Amino acid sequence: MADQEFQGQQQMSDAAAHCLIQASPHQAIFQGPFHSQETYAESSVKNVSPVRLLINIKVSEPLYLRSSPRCFILKPGEKMTIHFTHQPFVMIPGETYDRHQVLYLVIVVNELGTGAHLADVKKAKELKNLANESGIEWYLCRMRIGFQFTDEDQQAADQQYQQQQQYADQQGVQV
Image: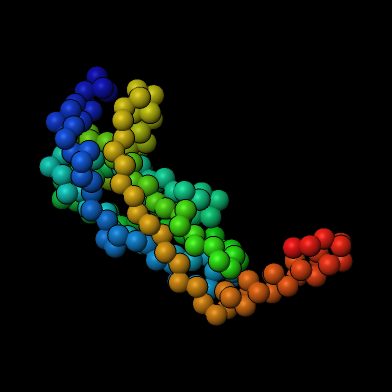
């Protein structure tokens, strides 16, 4: 019976050519300084399809980046604000940080009825587990992460580099 909740996926087989959700902004921008505190960004996700969607958010750098919520159901036309938190880190000069991404994994879900948001959150986690166990294919939509580093970040990076250089000199190692 639970498999029936995914019947809408067949109706959307041609939808893989485009994303079923719309994120605004398309890039989550974190404002520095990053070396001493958590930083935050948010994005709105809207269901632009005619069916309910189960959305599971994955991040490319889970040690540094997390989202809230991580798994939820969106009705057609409904919007959800996603809050992102990035752990403190010292920037590496020359690093582009291109690998930092948010992945929206999307499955079309048959109509589940109207329930409280809390019930939908519990249902979303159950459906995510069912989808993974059943081997159902997720649609993938990506969002880039951007960083606006400050002079303070550059100073922290320079200081860390100098400390590493001094330690290497003491150990007789070249950096």
